[in-house]
Image (tube, rainbow, N blue to C red; front, side, top):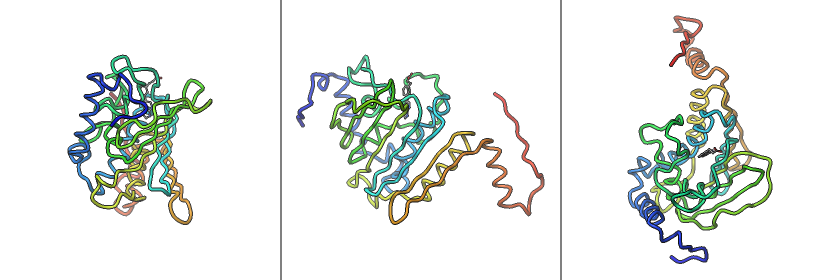
Length: 255
Ligand code: 0RA
């Protein structure tokens, strides 16, 4: 499909590979997100949130916000460094565009960075993009706000500066593609709640806020555990306090 923004870069081998990658995700979605039902639908969220958690584990992000919106879309915001916007040397496009379109480009390119990936995770935010009717990314860094938009993984509006900003971070908003998912594309509050709370327990001190703007009255919950896994053990103990053997959990830390 020719668009007004078609460029020479679109015909480079890198760009053709990107197109083939996204086509494969859409042809075989379950290979990437596990299934095309409720589990796979929610996997899209985890994929995006995991990138923000990585940024937190690298010590650059203290807060993640997840917002369920009335139109069925979801936004994931973090106060990390913001996905880089400069031109990617190999692809010749902004790095944020490469992260969101190239399979396996994921969040960071430095291999040493601490990643939460494992099992099905870490297939990358480009999979989420490919399986979304639309996706928008906003990056706040270097005193500016940038925005890029996609439809079913294909760049719709190239990266542009949308204004000045003193903020720092990344916001990703997407609407899952209902032609991919076999059942409802409605996110379930309790599924998201459970996952975000677990992530907060696993990342001591990280603040995760979940807001549900759908329906009559908005709902908001905040998860932040100063002592992380230790707080989790205390919560588990309190659930079955009658069977407690030890009052206080034994905590050991090392590498
Ligand atoms: C690549 C490099 C850098 C940050 C990120 C990716 C990054 C990715 C995501 C995805 C969601 N939130 C994110 N925040 C950051 C480091 C860039 C630098 O050195 O400034």
